Image (cartoon, rainbow, N blue to C red):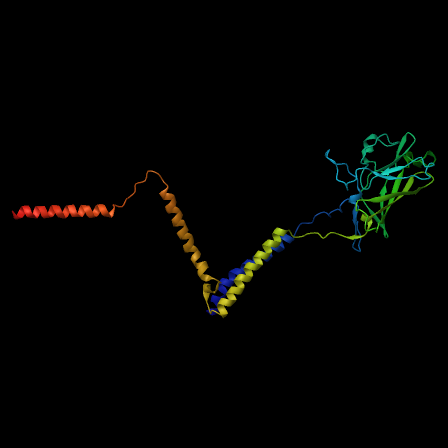
Length: 323
């Protein structure tokens, strides 16, 4: 009998806890989803190394407001040095098209001009050396970015035949990133250097020295939201309150049945409290209704005077009968 009385309130708590676990397990069984792609211009290695070069991408402000001091709005420049006797300098962007829109690229279709990420000017001509690309590559410990499908290469190295189809070799760029360990360097700053190109002027190599090219740890992914964490803490607190209270009431206060619940008198009085509140509210609402017949109390003074008048009248009648 005591065993049954102990489990009557505790059984509900155990059932609630089991329901929570089953619901949590069901929510974790998600259908197969496609693999989430990495964020553009970021890459992580199997050893835990993480790179994020998004701060090197130049973007023009969407509004006409003056940009912040640390926000760069000009594309990255690289001096050509001995390339064509120092007559050509390079302009490029990282993981994005040229911010300052350009046109009339040699051998590039007009609808692709907006995707050009690197180019150089030679005389009155403008040559593209690669289209936009946001996929970083790790080759050993070297972080690189490739731009392809630029302007056609020089004629003596352009034509390769594949059956009856004529293929054209196009200019490309290879950008290698190096870590700038200067503690005073700004995160969005970089030094872009032109390294060289092959004799056929089809491949160009650049190096970028920047603080964001240093190895970092990948930001932790938050799997549970703050609302779920708060709800879990509340559930645990309620369970500890009830289970601990039942244990105390049974073993210390020697309570049985529903009296094992902590603060049983409060829980038992909730029903009567709700009933009283309902009665009070109902009476208040009925008192506000118009055109309602009401019983009024006669003042006590008026009752007293009326009783004296009645006594005087009786005495007068008695005297008349005596006469």
